[in-house]
Image 1 (tube, helix red, strand yellow):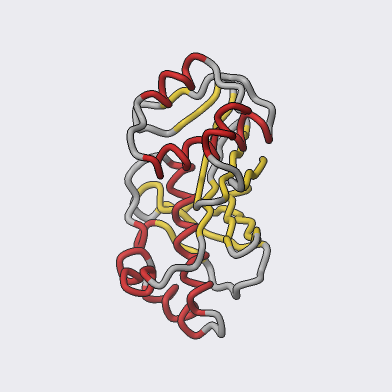
Image 2 (cartoon, one colour):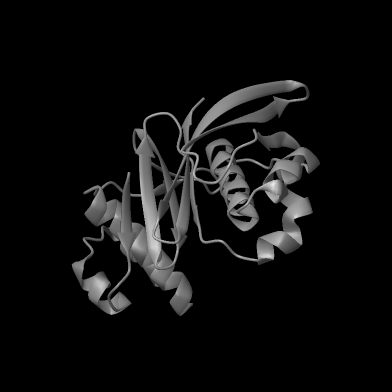
Length: 194
């Protein structure tokens, strides 16, 4: 895994990026300046941080992968990360944002909200909950009900190892380990095991 912080003009970063033909074709389809920044910083984490020159491919559901490995990319400007794993990959980067308080019932189960909102750092707890569920979603690459099928066990912000479960079929739950840490003011959450 590698992270990249965009602290230069995007055009300067583009000059440094060793893009392959697939990257160039993908870049040409991006019209929005913010989306181009996100794409560039994600590619910098992959191409410069991990020194990977393999073409990024996409499963039918849109989940990226590399030949012989799973890939997850995440960004929350100015930071992005890339994670390569032989079997699965799930990572999310998020800065605490009060909008999570407004949509908390959509992504968090009532039991999760109970412990998160009682935390001394409730916004951080909500951010970690959201990011953990985003990372799990990236592992499965299919529609999952965030509040009901992706569950995070009680934790406190600052904990580095969390546990979670995903309902893969009605009544059948698969446990997962999750790593959690900060880069500057961003929370990084990574699914580490099945």
